[in-house]
Amino acid sequence: MRKIRGILGLLVFGIWSCQTTDDPTANPQSDVVKDAIFSTMQEWYFWNMELPGEINTANYASNELLLEDIIYKPLDRFSYITTQEAFQNAFVGRNAGHGFGFAFDQDERLFLTFVFDEAPAGKDGWQRGWEIIEINGKPLADYKTSSGGYNFDLGPPDPGISNTFTFRLPDGSTTTRTNTKAEYQSNSVLYQNVYPIGNKKVGYWVYQSFKATAGLTPTRSQEVENSMNYFTGEGIDELIIDLRYNGGGSVAVAEQILNYLIQSSNSGKVMYTNKLNEDKSELNQSENFSKIGSLNLSRVIFITSRGSASASELVINALDPYMDLVLIGDNTFGKPVGSFPLSRYNRTLAENDVELVPITFATANAEGKAEYFEGFPATFSVSDSPNIPWGDTRDSRLNAALQFILDGIINGRVQQEFYRPSWEMIDSFHGLQQEFPAY
Image 1 (cartoon, helix red, strand yellow):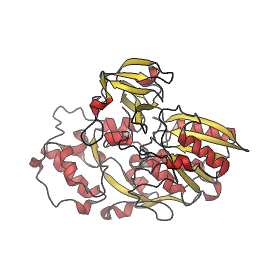
Image 2 (cartoon, helix red, strand yellow; image 1 turned 90 degrees about the horizontal axis):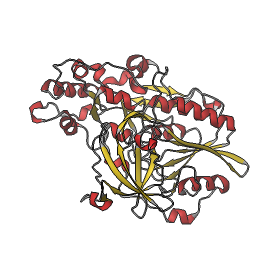
Image 3 (cartoon, rainbow, N blue to C red; image 1 turned 45 degrees about the vertical axis):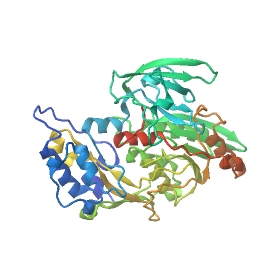
Image 4 (cartoon, helix red, strand yellow; image 1 turned 60 degrees about the horizontal axis):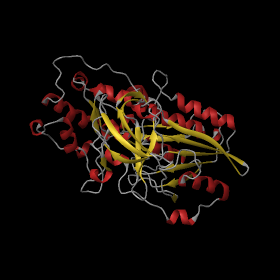
C-alpha cells in the first residue's frame, strides 16, 4: 500500500515543494517543451493508450492547445497546465483575486455565495446574500452570452486589477464598491455551528475546498483539525457537511477528514483504491482508514451541487460502504479521477516552469464503485438559497437537512419547487481554477 507513496511521495496526496527556475533562457512555449509534454503524457496519462501515436509540435501555438487536442475527450474535462508556483499556492490557499463566489437564484438574480475572510472582498465587509445588480456600471443582462451562460469579464486573478460592483443589501438599500484584486490567504471553513434538533445535537460544517496548511507535516489542514475538535467537544450526534461550492483540492486533506468521520470499528479497512495506467500498474494501491478523534457517527448528511467535485466526491464515495449517507441539494459534478503534477518527472518541464497536471489515476471505494462521471445523484433535490446567510435556517438546503434529521422526511413542496440553474460558477472555470473556484 505504501509503494506509491514511497515513489510519488506527497505528489499524489498533498503538496510538494519545487523551486521554479530563474534560467533567463527558459522558453515555456518552445517545441522542446511541447515534446516534453507529449512524452510525459505518454508515460503518465491515465488514458495514455488513447493518445495519438505522434504529433507535430509546430501545429500548436501553445502548450494549452496541444494538451486540449490530445486528451481523451469522451471523459477528460479536467487535465490542465499551469506553473509550479500557482499549483503549490492553490493547494495551501494562497490566492489572488477579489475572493468571492456567486450564484443565481431561480429568478436569475445573482448573489454573493461566499467571501473569504482575508480577501479584498472580505476585508471590505462583503457578505453572502448580497445581490449583485451591476458590474462595472453595466446590468447583468449585458454579460449574457449567446449560449445562455455569462461572461462577467472580471479579468485575470492578478493583483492590482479593479472592478466595481453595485449590490442590493438585505435591507433593500444599495451600495457600490470598487474592489482591487490582491494576494490573500483563503479559509476553507466558511461556517460552523451546532443546532439542538429534538433530542440531538447536530453539527453543521460549511467546507469550501480541501486545502492544506502550509508547513504542516504530514500534509493536513489545521482548519479541519480545529473544526473536528469543536464538533467533538460539543458532543454532536449528527453532522451536516455542506460541500455545495467545493470543487475539490488536496486528497491528503480529504483523507484527514475521512479519518475523523469513520467509525472506530472500521479503522484499518479500505478507504479507497488507486489505479494508474497499465504502464504504471505496479503503483496501484489501497489506502486504509486510520481513525482520528472520537466522533462516532452512523450517518453523514451532505449538501451538494454541481459545484461539488473531485475530493468532495472522493469523501462521499469512500464513506458510502461504511455508513448511511444522505445527499441534499443537487447531483454532484462527476470526477472519479485525479491528478498529480508531473514536472518533477521531466527536467525540461521543470526548467521551463511548466506544471503539467493531467488525469493520472482513478479511484474506487471498498466496494469497487469507481466510474461516477455523471456525479452522485441527490437523495433529495432542493434548490439553493444564495440570498440567505450561512447558518440561517431559512436556507432551503440547511432547513431540509435539519427537517430530515428531525422527522425522517423532507417537505414534498420543497422538492417539487427544485430549481437547477442553467449556469453555475464552476462552469466559468477550467483546470486549476475549477478545482478552487473563486473570483
